[in-house]
Length: 383
Image (cartoon, rainbow, N blue to C red; front, side, top):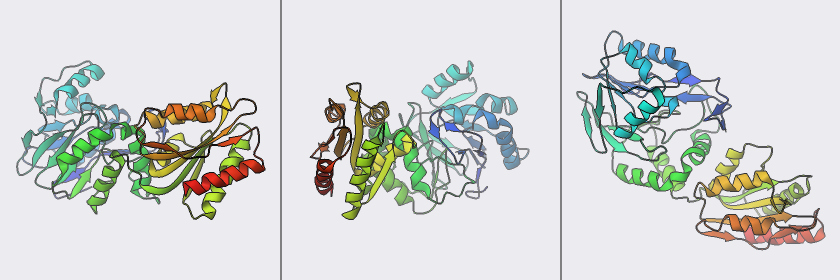
């Protein structure tokens, strides 16, 4: 597939993978993107997952025919992008591997080899290919420490490593559009590193872009300000949508009933609401929604003097990703010693700009008339 006259797509789609990185559900598959720049010095941009060695090498051969690549650029060493470096060098042994010092160290760790024919680059370095020039942009911890981006000054392409990536194979026409699975991908994988993403966005400010070529997901070529702006919003930990996300953990359905009563009250007031049973729905979609909405409600039973395990895990996923700038309501349930509200509040002690919305809805075993009164009060204060 042509991106420009000189830049070709040689990546692959994976429809067999069930969990990305061993934890993220990917029902629509995954794309592992790789690119070829056809110039005086033919350059391959990154590798693909180990299971697609033959398909990838065949794609390259179809693109470059009998020519030989001068460079293999390694922007990111995660195995879904680096697994075939050594296999590529068996096929094209004269190719120079271009990356940074940290990447070459990780290559040694993964493959137990030392790359001899290499070119080490750092932030701001230029690589002349002919009419194309690559300018390297260090992007440490977006989301590994060795990550680089590369900007093609001729075709105005940003090769963005994992930034601007999304879940889903490229041959899957996602009816929900780019943002849904890009958001789940960002907050699951990159979300902890908002400050580092901000640093990279500042480096890119004012750079003319015509295409963004990520290592996952589609080539972005239209309305690029939208993608840049949404990444700016996400990495500043600003809310994308005004509304309430309700996440609940219920053993016998009583806490769930209260959560749905709150949902009904909010909807009556015209508030946009999303709700999830943490034990039964994709928890990473719940993480996505918790960051997306500006208000959340956590509803859980008291369990062994603390909170239900799935709620505990969910909150840990939020706080380790820098959760901040939110209003949080609480519904707690306990038959003899309700503790959930106190425990939840303690778990956000180190989080920035968190406001707890009163009142706490306290259920003693099952909702009653008093519960509904408190729920209506909480709904009113969440509007």
